[in-house]
Length: 286
Image (cartoon, rainbow, N blue to C red; front, side):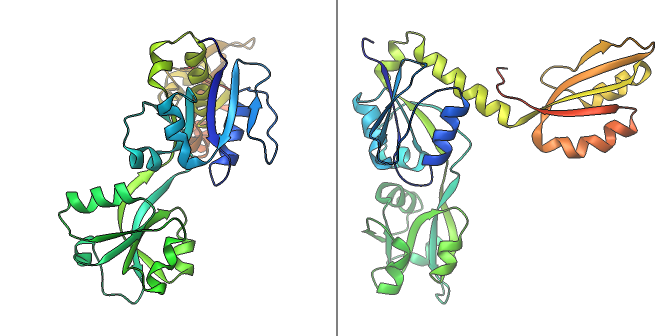
């Protein structure tokens, strides 16, 4: 590729902050003004395009950008086969069927013959067609949650993360249509012409995400307790065991799941560990 690689990311919405944070945590240096349309990465051959979230799939599929970060629901909605490199572990939400609290509907089948309002037309139609439930899908560009109150539809299909918006509009969920999160996309041509830059970006992001889910543990222990402690600390492969100056003592280093740390500590101490250090990991390449 003769030009600098381009990465399209959202310019508004819930994915903006975690996406910019991920790129910066990965080591990319760039300035992102509030109304910026493009940012030049200073330490890598990459330009970042700030565009509408709904346009990112098309930008990547058409080759305007080699890479893109957007919601998995929008990729499925476009249904154009753009390659997905990996999910990114943030922006998790659910495309959900919701109905008014005082309605009698309890399942998707109860909506047969009724109207369902949504901005996710393709996903909604596919869901009901696969279940063989005849519904009239009503397109809305936003604020689908007000459709039942305005008499536009008996139910909606909308993205739900915490559920507070549904509650605030007198709605309750009855069924999940699709689970979504942020995803990294790549253009077919960029994949076929791999010159190393694409692999580097993938490695940078994957190493940063892997580090977020791990902690580095260091501790001292009697040599006689090594086997017992090793059983508690499998690490990525196995813990590192290092002899100490004091006879019969060792240092043990291990990488563990962040969620498991606090449950491990009392067991490690009971098995003879002391001087336990818990350290963050900046990057982790398995």
